[in-house]
Amino acid sequence: MTSRIPTVGFDLDMTLIDSRPGIRATYQAFSAETGVWIDADLAVTRLGPPLEQELANWFPADRIDAMADRYREIYPLHAITPTLALPGARDAIQAVRAAGGRAVVVTAKHEPNAKLHLAHLGIEPDAVIGWLWAEAKAEALREHGASVYVGDHTGDVRGARTAGALAVSVTTGPCDEEELRAAGADVVLPDLTAFPAWWERYLGESAALA
Image 1 (tube, one colour):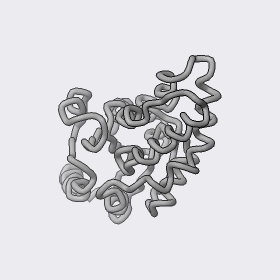
Image 2 (cartoon, rainbow, N blue to C red; image 1 turned 90 degrees about the horizontal axis):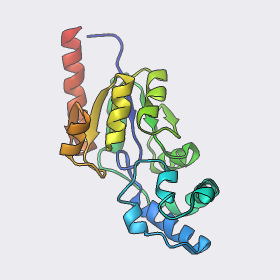
Image 3 (tube, rainbow, N blue to C red; image 1 turned 180 degrees about the horizontal axis):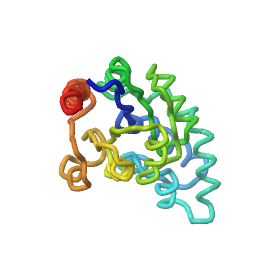
Image 4 (cartoon, rainbow, N blue to C red; image 1 turned 180 degrees about the vertical axis):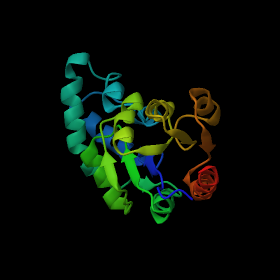
């Protein structure tokens, strides 16, 4: 077997955590504060891209930066407690670390808020890198030497492929298997409960080729 176990990157929203209840609550509070109607139920079906892209549906361009700052400021008050770990999330991280690998979270979310979610849920990756979306995620994946990236969105697939990493997708987010495969996903799992078995097979196959 190779002596070096791969580093695995994971997306956060709708890959490791179901942040929809918390984000919905934050949008509702934010709408009440600003007086601007936001369809929170619709917004949580479009998770993945940066916050600014969603806010552009509700605010004029010259207000988006200020509104994003305020949203992120109130986010911990409303979003952390209602957010749940998705099935298999902790076990997936643990499977990587138990094999001697490193697990890093690479997300488009505001990094301090991402860390709050993980700490609250007792999920302990080796590193958390925020503010990166789609192809830009390749920057952190390369920096940390990740050869596998797990996500739920076609943007995550693009990030993995840009980094030269194996693109592993789960269908727990807004993109179905057909969309993910069309984007170039190498592996599609129903959710992270299937990850440990896949990971064991992957390590075995990698060892056989070494």
